[in-house]
Length: 422
Image (tube, one colour):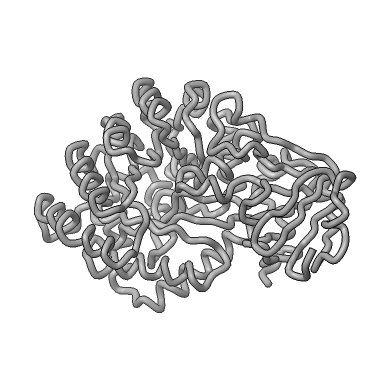
């Protein structure tokens, strides 16, 4: 091995998630994550060069490694992929949180001028530099908890200038931060005050989408299709237009009511449908039949104090590619740590910890079109790995609120060591 290499050996529990080149895991296979005891991973440059038992390590990987890490007492997983977040925003909604604690609903707060529009006002007022620094600190926190790839949506600008500003922050961070940032345009998040619904949709369709595509500010286009947000027909128009401009469709849907957004996802060829707390059996069948990732966001249900979680077990049994994400945002899920999301998924949606691991790695990568490159520990994939201070992967969701991350390797470079950023 050359000096630009890392050898992890004597790993107590090496969770590769997959070694078969599969794009995602479904059904009973979601729980079938490959675990190697006494494992080893050889990293050359930014890629994984070899995976297996330490006892079987070829001689070529035993000598000359740039750094050898003895991983006795450690569990190694692929880096977490947080495939649904809104981490670029300004302001706080702590007062709204307090109001919900007193019994006011999310819808009531929004109707009174809070909610998305509250964050919109703060984000419009913030400079590019202010947003960049705020978002950078959030990414550092997420990295310390093992997230190595994160999707980032706009949607708190609701005008061309601020939507573009948010996306430019995400793109800039993608070039300067260790984490991989995947930008998504979400102009159709809400209708701002002072403009009619039809006028705003015209702005999204005729100005925002062409501008975002021309300046390559996003890879995906999302839309909030739900009661009180955008209708099925409106969502179809937005995603169809986005697709014409080369943006890949995603959809927020069925968070609060069953509206038919999964049908739109199937029609436009969306890569994922997200939330799905109110999805019906027919919706679930559509997702499975069209290979659409079902991105479940239990953190938002938990944070809003609701009781209706997505039917993860039905989705798994129907062979939907189930993924998990934080939905990190200021109003409905101020949670940025994937291990906590895994805990909520296990306790409230009855997912097995192994299913939660696969849903947070390989399947989450599938939900952003990257499972061929990340999400599992396989030869030829990017070397995104996390070393945990435990001998069992079961401890990661079990010890909720405790950060067990010791080391994070991103693209073959150690970026967190002994729980600290390098």
